[in-house]
Image (cartoon, rainbow, N blue to C red; front, side, top):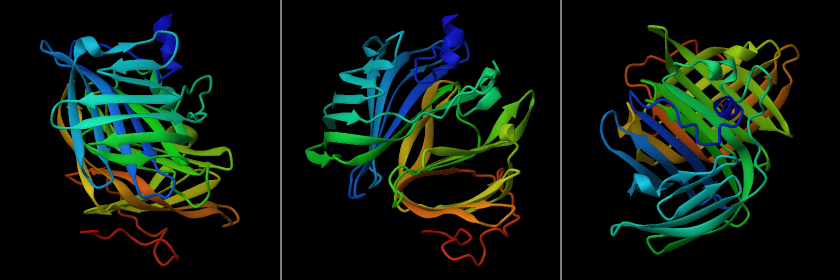
Length: 343
């Protein structure tokens, strides 16, 4: 019964099958009020097949600097009735982050208060961002969005550099399973001109019953409403093209079309799971720029056009598995361009 309950509460420690390796990681992205500093804080655990178990915390800044804190397995603990995890000297809940990390090479300390979370809403047959795929027992990786947007208050000191986040914005998600996909695109921003606007987008090659398919999930939070684009909502991917440091894509459903063009600047390297072992590498930028347009298909009315700063961008598609080269939606439209290299 408790395992079934956790399906509806992705923030909780999911404690999945471990025979083939297992990882679980929570991703907290926090940005200051001026938009000058963004930090990703990623606590988690790694269980290697027939090998070691350990906790970890990764910290990455928008200048590309990142640090990995390898922590004892015994230092990880989780509450059973609410989202609260501890690893090393750190504590994480939906409303607070307490950091106390020092491995001799790097030191990170501070406390952040997080505002009321805005999770991806669940429905009877769609418990979160994965929709009905969340019920599939054999997925390589599961995904949850714990808060699309919330306020941030407090300070963090990173190697003697004090960062003040008072009046800032935050975003929280998580992943768990065995491995990340072979190819994926991830874009996230809540650094728009209007507070309360948040975009999250994931497009990936998903293994499925001996084959694979390209899955896409995009959500735009706008004026308290979440516009969702996924296969289970009837949406489909119109186009996706990318070049070094940039990606653009468009999706539509029966009523709306969403178009996204993103470019990054200074990527950093994060560790990623491969059969539970944190030995892969992900290039992530935290200071990208994302242009978004949401349009009503029938009338052509622009519901929203905006630019998000301090945006998170991951582009991991080495063989072009995700490319859908029907690029027509954004060409010639002011504020949107086909992707070009940012290098």
